[in-house]
Image (cartoon, rainbow, N blue to C red; front, side, top):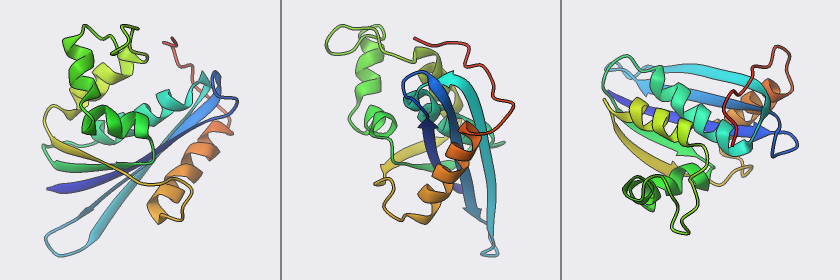
Length: 158
């Protein structure tokens, strides 16, 4: 099954303000019918990069069987980590950057890698705030979640 995951993250007062993620999953069944699911969540104190990661993670974790997944995000942080092979180098270097600094958000990177395991995943970057309908929809979900009530604690902050 081919699935497209659109995702966006938002943080107010980045770093370490309230934030949220928005995710839209889409797939077309064998009859040509489009199926969609939306996810969002907000956190009291977080960063934009953590919310970008969470959006993708939530989308992948929602899948119940192995899929061919295209992740579309306006986050170069997320897309370049895979398209520019950063993640491979981080792992090879013991979760350290090329500059020998510890990689930030290791907890979420590891969770993302785990969520990707059963799937074939590709990452595609799209310019944010440029009228892309699903990206705009994810942005609205993310900002609404960040501004909402009942925000969760982002337990690991670096």
